[in-house]
Image 1 (cartoon, rainbow, N blue to C red):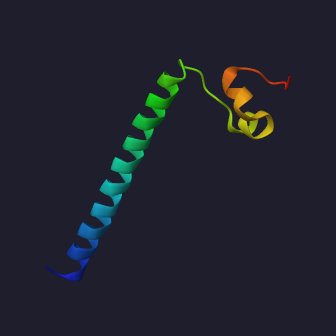
Image 2 (tube, rainbow, N blue to C red):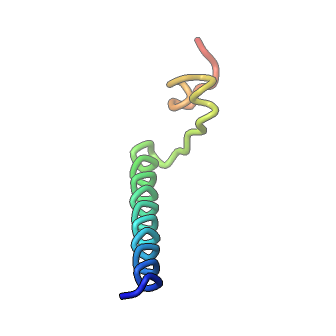
Length: 61
């Protein structure tokens, strides 16, 4: 096996690993969204309003 074949195999393994990690993250994100009842929570709202943003409230009581 020469250097070119080895490089192709290593790059291919890295690419396959990245695709697998991406798919696992997408599946986990879908599970988290389903657990929230299909609602999407904006991260900016979580920073500004804390856990109340997850409940759909955007003002503090």
